[in-house]
Length: 408
Image (cartoon, rainbow, N blue to C red; front, side, top):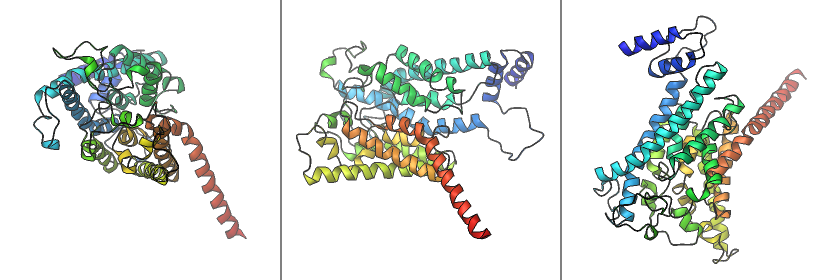
């Protein structure tokens, strides 16, 4: 009660000043707002936007914790400290405190920088413009550490976060006005500004990149490879992981994108809490499967040579595309962003299907960047308003026709 009372006193003290939004944000983040509406209330509920954002964060926490264990596991596996797991989630080689602490001390700074820089920018804009601090970055701040390589330099992450918040959101008017997903805007900036830190076979495993001088004693950076499955397939290499490894997440990759199982559980949590759109998730999966089946048919028909640089990913089992790369994570946590996604029900089906379809299309035809879900979602963010426009216009025309029939 002491903290609540003190925050309330500070809130009242700075009421009407430029610093008011900062104290209001801290107060309402920790406690329910003490203001109530008196007129024009249509729906009364216990939740608010901050609680909704926190629910999405809760859905991502299992991915974050698993990512910490996996970061340490992939590091120890790469330097030969442990053997590959053989018993899945019941493996004693994976769920060790050593794996967790290696991952914890590498990923925690990413989370701190993401939230520290992002919320700092939000507070600055709120104070300058004189409006309340917006809640949108609560989710973005958690998404960003989960979609980057574990060894990304912190200063690069900070620069990307500044770009994503200012250029990707604030210039459009802030939360609710942006046309692109801020987290994907940040990742796109990192990929195009610092491509060598975002791709290749060295960036996905802690300590594998020779530019990071924090290997265990005696480890040789050049001898360690941490290539993702997509990277291997894009180069026509054999993949050493089976479907269960891909599904459970015991593979190299971005921090929170490897475990399809935990992503599905997070998606179900969002669906049953009525925050995530099941239409977008399901249609994205259908779109990816359709594109995968088309490529499988082309590869099996002999229309493309096995020596082609496209053949390896084109001949990959169509359903494997759902388990590798960031497709599942992007579909559940970023394609469903209520601000940048389609708003109409029919539009959500079209929007999601095209995301899945285009993701696999980019993945196969762009071996230099075999992960296509980021670009697919950003592309469809731009077209979401257009999709909704034509859906609404189509409904209007149908109703006008029915009206003419009744009045005839």
